[in-house]
Length: 218
View 1 (cartoon, rainbow, N blue to C red):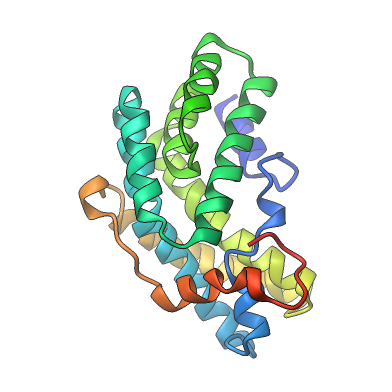
View 2: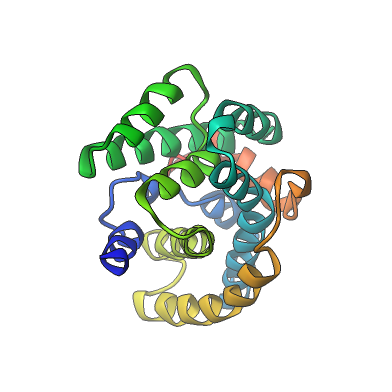
């Protein structure tokens, strides 16, 4: 059943709202920073590395000490100085816990949902506590986060017309194999290692709200 649960969590149909976000790709594309297949692959890898250094520390911390969720949430709020990324994290965090509580109702998830009512509800620490409550192993949770970052960028690339469906899947496969090494390197990262590794992507994402026309929320 654990495998079935993981497949469901990584399925694009799972209602976390991630489909509404491009992780900065839309802004990067409109600003001419992503013009080729190599650019798209580099952007996707940057997004995965940023997820590893900017999300996994708090996924791990919250998984390890779920009772300190409010503290991890406040730390992530201070870290996400980019208003667009901060807003997207809050939206996806609340959607994640609400979806999990409706799909797999339990006292543990009900308590988490109640607790986030008074927090910013950022997605990284909530991923840690929700996946722990669901019985997802920490290593699996880490790989889901990295996979989701790559899939989010490449799914957005298809809808923006940056690349086609088949090529996006080829890139997903290539980046997926590469991200296995990233997962291994960042397996034991914690809140003290929280870092921004893609500042240019962060700046581009921050410019998202100024685009003349937008398909995505971020």
